[in-house]
Amino acid sequence: MADDIPFKRDLEFEYGTLEQVAPGIRRIVARNPSAFTFHGTGTYVIGQGKVAIVDPGPMIQEHVDAILGALQGEEVTHILITHTHIDHSPAAAPIKAALGVKTYGFGPHGSGRHAPGEQVEEGGDPDFVPDVRLAHGDIVEGAGWSVECVHTPGHTSNHLCFQLREEKALFSGDHVMGWSTTIVSPPDGDMAEYLSSLRLLLDRDDEIYWPTHGPPIAKPQSFVRAYIGHRKLRERQILGHLKAGKARIAEMVPLMYRDIPRALHGAAARSVFAHLIHMCETGRAVCEDDLAVDARYSAG
Image: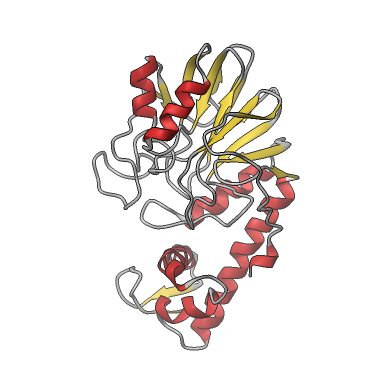
């Protein structure tokens, strides 16, 4: 299944070093590598002199110190947050405290679909509340740069991408990544919204994506088409298993994800669950119990 997307995993970087990666764009990578973050969180800096930080990253003091040290002599005017997972937003708090700069984002964790304070999922950052709330189509302007906000729910309900308009470069967060597919985990993750958000990108003029994890994505529209095709293929797999009498997600995952370590099968089960919710909503599958990971399903 991995070969249906043209993944690119080569990334040259040095932890803790702010490097120029494109005109108007610098990146510094946090030392938080994992099966979900690849080499770690890539924090981006837009502009020169008066700059914006995109996704300051996890609460790792080494990373916070590296950002603050690298930007000495420059003025941080904005902190932009793509979404509120713990590898993206927590470092905003100490950087804001040190520099007195405002944070910008869609809203608190789960704010796209959940009540304030509702427990959504593990891995979320419930403490982050943006000083300035952004919506789809909003423009944030700085010194010699501007970004357009693109609301892309699915991975999380509050996920935003940001286009650096001067370069037609989209900071795609975790919505589209060049090294791996994106986890969609209910209840905040939603497969119908995710697919809709992917299709939204096909009509845009972005020339390159800069994900928070991994290398940039050239020819992004064709990459997004492969992402959509991959999700459609997963749903055909699920339907095939349902028709063959495999009624539970636990029966499907070892067959569908035999090429990934078993330690990641729990995350894979969440994505299959997201697919099945979407398939039940569209009449292609039926849940024989209350919707849950351990429920029984059949073909619609």
